Image 1: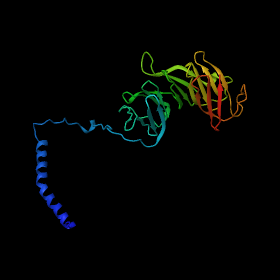
Image 2 (image 1 turned 120 degrees about the vertical axis):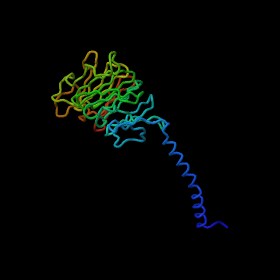
Image 3 (image 1 turned 30 degrees about the vertical axis):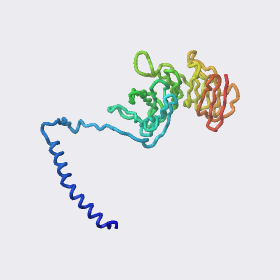
Image 4 (image 1 turned 60 degrees about the horizontal axis):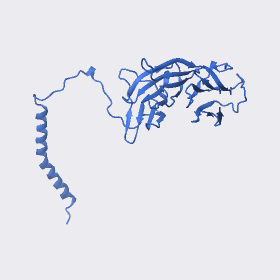
Amino acid sequence: GRPSRARRSQASAIDRERERPRVRAMLKGLKKLVGRDDGPRLPTCPLGEVRLAQAIHYGLGPSPSVLAYDPIQKLLAVGSQQGEVKLLGRAGVEQLLAYDVDEPRPGAVNLLEFAPNMHTLLSAHDGGFIVVWDLLSRRARLRLSANDVVTSLHAPIGSAFVFVGTAVGLALVIDLCPPDGPPRFCSFHIGRELVPPQALRSAAVVAVAASPLQEELLLVAWDDGTIALFDMLKKRALLARYALRGGEAAAERESHTTAAPTCLSWHSSGRQFVVGYSDGQLAALAG
């Protein structure tokens, strides 16, 4: 019949006793090999010069806060409250983007935007910092300062420019490919004061969007309800709608809502756009 449990455990103990001399001999041989004087030795390193590097990072970091997707390269970027940016590709492919060791990590990631076909990702952080990431090296290329809280980012397809909205109502422009150096802010900017009639108070930019057909046409929305279509070559507003709370400015045409705009989107034809509002309404305007 089958051996009892006591006999089986006794047989296993006997087998372990037989294996012990062989294991001891193997360990003794390893100690002799490691202790040989003629073998290669690694140079010693003072403790003060030791720097730890992260070799593997799997999954998302703590407190993810924002997403961005590149439909061309099929990449997903995830930003966190700790300032980390994780890049995700196909199944099993992921990369934690790295800052320089000597560079302090910026604050929480508030916005992410891919620059299509430019191998570039931009992240907006607390304190008005914008980090330009090189997706080929998976490292931070440089860090720019908008000198104010960044409220919106927009990188049009086929363009080397990125449009940045700020809390003081400015729409700034970043040139990703200047002929004489790294990416930088251009001297050109759009302010709320260019939209007649002028508002009695400053308002934050909530969205910027360039026309898909005419890059010189830029749509800007402020949180006071103003929406303007700018010709950046002529530096003037071609179209303006107002929905200011409290009656600071009168509209040329009565607006359908007094809610603040939250987002903008162009039609692919470049002849009409849609505005979303905080009360859930949508407004479509055609040229």
